[in-house]
Length: 237
Image 1 (cartoon, one colour):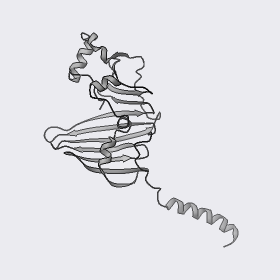
Image 2: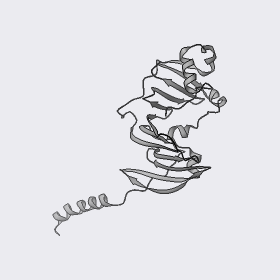
Image 3: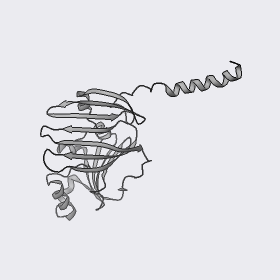
Image 4: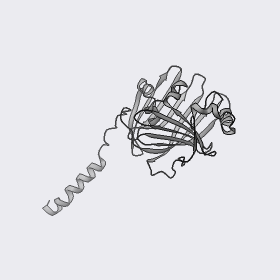
């Protein structure tokens, strides 16, 4: 082979072999590290043992110190913001342009203090740690790991996109034979999704601790009835 042919062929062959080579290792699921900022859309489906199946789509935005979820149909959402000292959770009601804010101490009193990792990744670290890794690999260009097993009387089947630290599917089967499934529909780099969080900076925000001062407020009365009356802590999905 003369030098001119070799100079052309060898680099081409190297590139071809690299393209056909094995994929890199699947990243470990490290829930202790800070997850990358993302925007995503999910669908939650609930199929009871008896009765009709129901589903709802919801959106999710995650940055370093801010997590937001939105249910577009219900026009409601949840916003979590943390700083060095405390965590704030605001339940948003977009049609009313109002919200109810809970501080860390409120959430502790309500026995609803969240785990930031679970909020940010939609995964309970203790649950995932108790399950068995069933498979791992690459799918549609992204790395995944799948975990299965039982916790108490509930069977779990969880698949996680490990580069973005987001579940692509969570299946929960209870002892009552009800099946709840959360599926990732679309995901984007933060700021590049076709939808953005509703602008809520100018909403009127009520402190949870001060709701007693607004007991005759039609908004508060309606929300209490919708959320069950005991307290107003809820979820966007």
